[in-house]
Amino acid sequence: MNKLLLSLFFISVLFFVAGLSAEVAHAQTPCQVTPTSTNKVSATVTISQTGNYKVWSRILAPDAVNNSYFLQIDNGCAVNIGDAVTFPVNTWAWVDYKDGIATNSAVFSLTAGDHTVTMTEREGGVGLDRLLFTTDLTCVPNGLGESCQGPTITPTVIPTATVVPTAVPTPTRTPTITPTPLPGITASSISMTGTKSGSTRTIKTTVTVRNTATLKNISGATVFLNLKSPQGTIYKFNGSTNTKGQVIFTQKLNLAGVYQATITNITKTGYTYYPTNTVKSIQVN
Image (tube, rainbow, N blue to C red; front, side):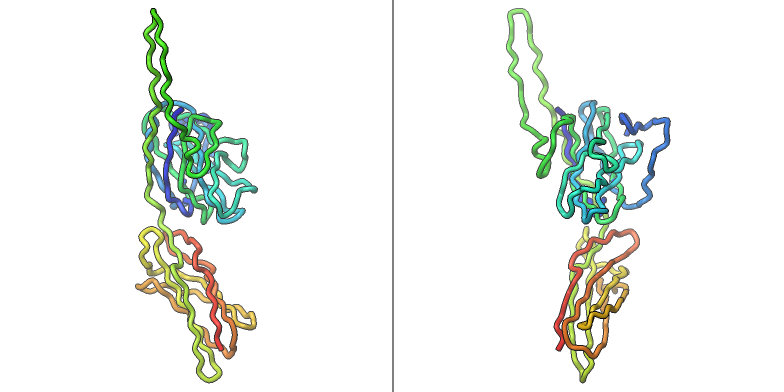
């Protein structure tokens, strides 16, 4: 049994075949879908033995709608992996099917040698950290895929007087490949202050944005924020981060009580937003 395990960091995602049985590189019919997102990552993998390989993907879905990505091998058609209405949310899950149909397995006929695997974002916020290629079509992985990487077995050959047996070769595991992660942005912190001058309360909300890959603060990102007053009124703001990766929103009101700030989105061309540290509250007397 031949197996290949790819380790990835694909948190969007990033979220994306000579010799395919269903999607062949020289297929006569056009591909049903062509990915348009520029958020993608590719890796070169080496298949040591020609055969039919089931591809398992370990996916993290942020909600019941965003739960799929496009998988393409070499120049074959892109395949929609996942996308089931019953997909588990906010937990890592192994998926081996296409187009949201559990019985439509992602099985590819691959020749021995190098192949280019491309993973492209189809829906925002989807995480992908591992791919498992295995010729054991009945194996179901769990955890990090250890269950489908069973122990190495060396058969014992019993000689006879007239036959010189040939030893069965031990299967060789293909090395793990770690592709370059896709760029992302997130709010590394959100803080609030409230001051009083006479009857006027000044509420300041500071948001710091950073690159999830480099962990450095990033400028030029647009932050969208809602401020809820003690009476329930929502004030909407948006602004760009400065060279320190920060943007400050200020609101003056004559109300005492609890103010709540909520980040609704962060955008920057070429980046994917991953929601963290989105809500902050403060009591202002």
